[in-house]
Length: 557
Image (tube, rainbow, N blue to C red; front, side, top):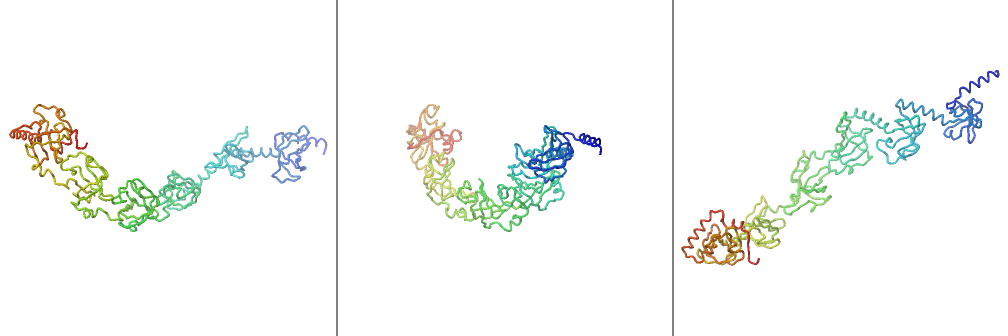
């Protein structure tokens, strides 16, 4: 070969070598620190040994390198194996990005906001794009290899942003469609508990999320799904409903077990004694589980025949085992009514045997109301003395005028109403009615003395001997016109008067102060005048008149 030809060849070779291009070279020598490579130039290039750490190389191997400089200060060719690989990889990455494909990469390290990944070149994986559910510990991903989607690439800055989440979501979408196409209601499937809420559990069915509602988890009472399942737990469930348009699947767990309500009437006939455990206490009663999945309600009114139970929690506790009686069953609504008091005899059944009418008792006053006094006959059973049955003679507005709580009183049984569980008592019936013999004690014309007990607009009531009240009408106070009763007499004043009327039927005695010196004939006239007042709205029987009295006085007050 002529010198001219050789120089031409060398010149041609030099023309092909451009800085920044990737060229082929042959390994000449492998030293501890550098590897010498011949690229067909006048001098060889040196590449640091660490660029070949993961490769098994030998002298004579052909490799691709990046020609950084044809000649440095020392006259050496500057080459890089890593930069050649980086450039080639970047071009591959750019092509994958354009085609919308996936790229494999190994997670190198945790950085602020996410992970750094080696996909041939360094790329960033944001924390939000690692998985569908953001992971708690990013370190668990370091060193692992995954497939990624390239979501952003910047040629100038050489930045790449990846997403693993989009890859997972795409896979799940495909799996979801496949699942929806192949599943039908009634199928049994295996899933993993993914999320738990107050209303139910979301189960991952290999890419498809199904909802297991709390009401479909157990036939029994379940306050919260966590009482039955935990995150990550594998479950066999039944497909209840499939909505392919909305991509929703409803699941059931209890449907895989026998329905305990199926033959409920046969197992628990009315009147049967049962034993169960108190599961919940509410204001109106207690729920009691009599077998797994079957609860009955004991209403607060069914706890005792006689005890006054304000709240079930006063006598029962959650977890307590109790006996009860089946009172009613509604299979459609899955409700059972239970009673505890039915285990004992109803004390009202033979109340008339224990307290026949006419029986005299001495018992304590339990409570006072505007219309009467409740007297405790025995625990939980009261009799009531109506305000009108306290006294024959005194006109009582409120029982507290005669009685107080805890006071022992004597009374007699007047009547019994078993159906409504009521007993009527009377105090005045222990004595003879003084009005029945009133005409033997008071006669028209008699002079009587007493104190003013009450004052009304139409007159004054005078307390006479024997706890009998008489009425002095305003017209009987003076010969002169009287505008107000208080202008003449006041409560507590001692008064002397004449009897002008004794009315046994109306239970009233008419008195006159002005008639103290009248003759028998004049007394009769006043008696007729008093009688004429009867139809008037100003004067009614003492029972009514006392309701309008504004003041009263009693001995000892």
